[in-house]
Each structure stands twice: as C-alpha cells, then as structure tokens.
Image (tube, rainbow, N blue to C red):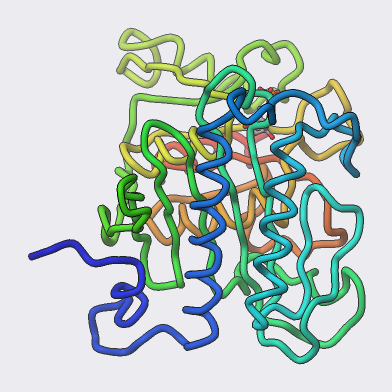
Length: 328
Ligand code: P6P
C-alpha cells in the first residue's frame, strides 16, 4: 500500500470513510505548511544569519532567539490566513491575539521549543494545541482543560522533519520528504509500550526534587539488584519535543517535575502549549501524564502561561510515580 499524504489522511483519518471536519483539515494543513517553512529556516541556520539572540525577551522572562521570533511570526500569520482560528496564543506573546471573529477554533503554540538547542544544531520543534472556540475575551476562552482539545501535535526538526498529531482518534506521524516538501504518513495508531527501561529527566536538579521523584529515580538507578530488578538507561535532550518523540516512538518516561529551586512555581513547562498537547498525544497512544496530583488533561487552567509539573510516558512507570506521590 502506498503511504498516504497528510491531505489523504485528513480525508479519512480513522479509516471508516469519514473525513476530518473541513475547517479542522484546513487548519492542520496550514500548520503543516508553516512547519515546512520553519523546518527550512531552521535547516539554513547560520547560512541565513538567523541564529543567536533577537535581543528581546518574552513573557516567560526568557531571551528570545531570532528563530523563536521568526517561527512565531510564521505561526501567527498562518493562523490568521486560515480564517478558521478565532484567536491564537503563543509562548512568545503576553496576550492572546484575536484573529477571525466567529471562527470555530482557538490555537495555542510554542512556535519553537528547545531554543537553547537551536544554536548547537540539536533537534527542536513546534508544539500546537487546538481548542474549540467558545465565547469570551482575551485569555478567558482558552482556559479549557486539556481534555477539551480537538487536536494536538508537534513537528520535530531533527534528522527528519516529522509531524505527529492526534485528532482524538489515535496518533499518526508524517515525515516530510525533502525533495517535494510533502508530509507522507510514516506512523499510524502509534502506541507507547507500557513497560520501559528508559527515563528522561535533568539529573543536575536531583538535589532539588520532591521525595517521591527522588525515590523513583533512585529505584531506577539501583538497576537489576534494586527494587525494579532491571537496569535503566537515561536520556535528556533538553528539547521536550525530541524527548517526547522518543517516548512515543519507543517508550520511556519524560519528567520535568516541580523542584525546590523556585518553590512557588509548579514547574518549568507550560500547561497550555507544552504539557496539554503532549499529554493528549501520550494518552491517545496508551500512555499516561500527571502533575504529581492529577492527570494533566484534567487541570482547569487559570492562565495562558501557567506552568505545571510534568511526568508522562509509559503507563507502568507513571502508575509507579502516582503510587509514590499518593504515599508521600
Ligand atoms: P533544562 C526547552 O527550553 C524546554 O522548555 C523544554 O523543551 C525542555 O524539556 C526543557 O526546557 C529543558 O530544560 O532545565 O533541562 O534546560
């Protein structure tokens, strides 16, 4: 069977002969066009003199890279031109941007996640979340729990440019064919293995972790003579998109939990455009995602840029973490 293009997939995403809603298909294709543009920009890097700082900061208080700004401009222009997005919210902008009144969708995105890796040629990506448009001004209509997402996905700019998305009926992957720029389906009904021997966490923060996290990692590090009775491997790319792509591709657990460095912050990662879209993908692929207290998709958001503790991936591992947190 010849591989389907993204457009062919959207014409029958579940294989039951029912096309994706027309406006959603328009938006997903528009996002893929922007990902192609961003992929091209990222791949040119120094050749296009677009690496390094933009000399500005974002609402997170982080230094913006030139590519952060270019990717954000691309995604915002796409959302407006699609005519199916009522408003858009970005990691790179303080406030939500009203676009097409009466349009059916809201979109949030991290236009280029993993900025610290841009200048050193390590995989980065675009993360997006699509919500139903509801009444309200400013940030208000966006503050829907992650379970309300209509669709979510990311595009990882690595050895391949791969778009991974869910419309709520499983997870599919599309790899961009460089000569044509076409996104061709390379993954269908992706499932995360329930068991794993691989964890991803920034180990340099070990002294700052809460006890349940420390206990879980200590058990993994104890290896085959410890309570887990198996040896674990560790990976940390410091690009959420790349780390989560590996978890979706071969299992594992990705963790950026709360820590004592900034005790008043629930975590480093953002709920609306990092944790929620990734959690929908992980749950749709048979994994789990929680913040130490509840499933991330059940969190009632209170702000566009709110942060959250994130532990997601292989079902068995998250259930062990849930048990350790419940006992704490
Ligand atoms: P650290 C990238 O800046 C990011 O937001 C995520 O993509 C990534 O998982 C995390 O931060 C890396 O954080 O503290 O390890 O540099």
